[in-house]
Image 1 (cartoon, rainbow, N blue to C red):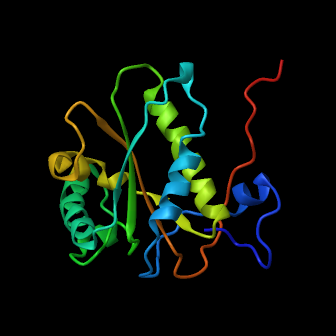
Image 2 (tube, rainbow, N blue to C red):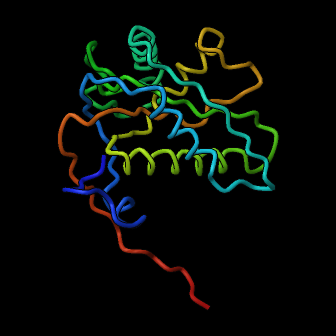
Length: 187
């Protein structure tokens, strides 16, 4: 989510400063053209040795999103100690009501594949912010998406790297406090 008044962002630093992990979305959908713009931004990310390993799955079927959410909760709970209270409620939606999930996947065939995909994810999230959309990485969905890979269309030789919800924010999202840069050495 970007918090701009009036005409929109002025610089890349405006976008970086105002991007938030949004956890409440309006029921509005996102047009295919808007999703394609975000995917194009993702593919402009830096990539080691020009590999461009990313592939994308876009899920906008609300029934499928609910099934993934329902499967993800118990799988994620098994790995958490302590378990966040929200995950204990059967009606909790891990996608926070967003109607679009973009999953960045790749074949694990090089040492920098995951880094490349996360760079693409950041480009996608910054582009969404600049467009007035909210995003949130949903790491708790990785196991469920992987388990449903055949139904979703992810080949068995691909890894699920970065699941990101995108949507119209339902309200303001406050900034999280950040630490000052810690410089280990400046030689």
